[in-house]
Image (cartoon, rainbow, N blue to C red; front, side, top):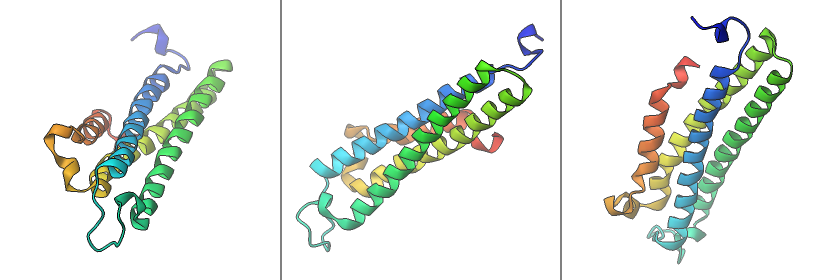
Length: 155
């Protein structure tokens, strides 16, 4: 038992905030690669009637949904960081608890968003995206591995 943990503290919240940022970053990277892949390499669905996959309104809608998930994860990350900063300014049991709850919510959401977006990369990009040589599966692998490190069910 260390004296650091005898009163209100933010060590856990700060550590979890870093993990939240990792998940949000994985989501951002997967989304950016999916956008680039669809714009430059994906073929349109044969029945879509479009010359480019990037013109497909169903893909555009799905990218919109994924972008909303990514923006929400980023917004929750920023809100959690602000809650930690606010708690640090007047640290007591209540402010430490509020910061910890904000970080836990952000982490649970960012992990879920990272998994969804990394998985959707293949959904929107098509079968070519699964080629080992492209290494796009690293986003899903990173999201899955990182979210297993500290599962959302424990938040």
